[in-house]
Length: 187
Image (cartoon, rainbow, N blue to C red; front, side):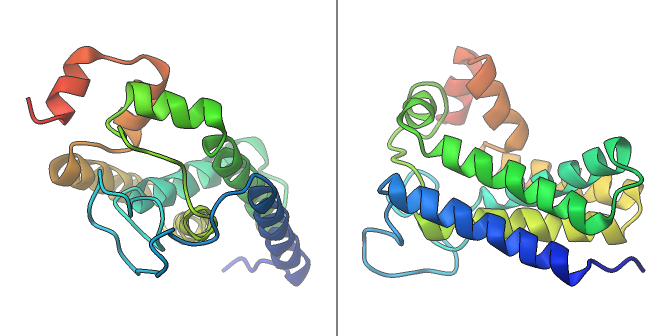
């Protein structure tokens, strides 16, 4: 089993700390503006979505970890696993910062099923990063076939449960479809 060196864990934590500082500077709320923290928020279009520790989109962030691990395996084969984790964390948290910019928040509202989306709490952004780390570590321990099966299972489960998943989320951000929007709305 390949171990991640302490210096890479410290680097990964530093990336999380920098992202936290940036999110604070962006005036993101530290926790849900409701004033409390929940382990799970199951209401997709409610005000608590993307505000607590986990939600339906946590599955997507685990899949990000699978994908970043695969990318590191393909592109950085000779680099230590810990360096790949640091790069994956930087990419994930860069997305969390971008996702909380007015441009992306407005895009989500206009083109996806996230009609009332107002961005993530800092807690949720960091938890999303943690979900990615979990996915990365799971993928580093499983063979690629088991990881792929797990990713497909997560995608199908969230598609069934909330009519959304990572694939549809990316699709709707990049090439919005009225047919998908209507289907997601229950039409």
